[in-house]
Image 1 (cartoon, one colour):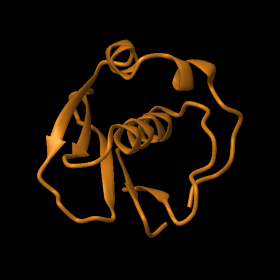
Image 2 (cartoon, rainbow, N blue to C red; image 1 turned 90 degrees about the horizontal axis):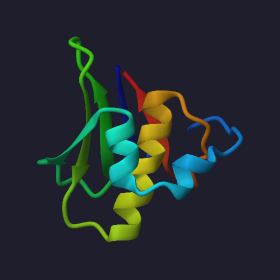
Image 3 (cartoon, rainbow, N blue to C red; image 1 turned 180 degrees about the vertical axis):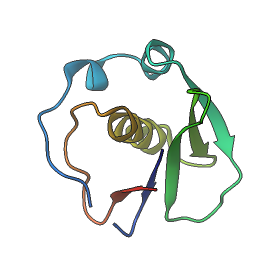
Length: 99
C-alpha cells in the first residue's frame, strides 16, 4: 500500500487523534516502526509518500527543501492516512492518493 500526498486530489473527514497532533514526530515514527527517508522527487506538488512494503516494513518518503512546519504537517497527515489513524481533513487543494 502506498499513500501519496499531492496538490491534486481528496481525503475524508474524521475526528483528530490527540497523539497524532501532540507527540513528537520522531516518537510517532518509532511507535509505528516507520523509517523516514529523503525523497529524490523535486516536484513542487509532491509532499511525500507513505509506503508499506511486502515484508511489512514502512517508509515515509519526504521531499527536501520544505519548511519544518510543512514537512511536519505533511508527515503527520501521511502517517494518519497510511496507518488508518484519525486525522483532520486535508486543506484544499491537497489530497491523499492510495495506490
